[in-house]
Length: 140
Image (cartoon, rainbow, N blue to C red):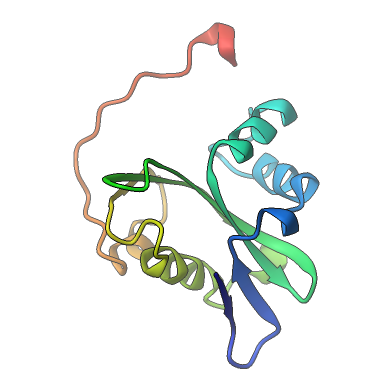
């Protein structure tokens, strides 16, 4: 599945072949939630997830990953746009692509964020209490 911007040279797709792991790793290293992840961990997470690439022409400038059973549940994670391409509504485009994607659109979606509540609320996400088990120190 692919989406193309009407007037700007951006597109989003779920093509595994187009993903650029080095770009994804570099982007995630700039985030508050994934900067601690090793390259090996990032690569393993890509292999076991449904991934979406955001491209400016042929260059990857954004990414979103979801963990899903494709039937009932989807965890949205690692939504990121390169700083040089922010402010153009591309985060919204990624979310719209996700909520319309036939593989997961009928699943319950959840995510965690510290600072983008307004973005996700536009796509039907609601704030709720969530429990978590932190990553064991030995696995970090």
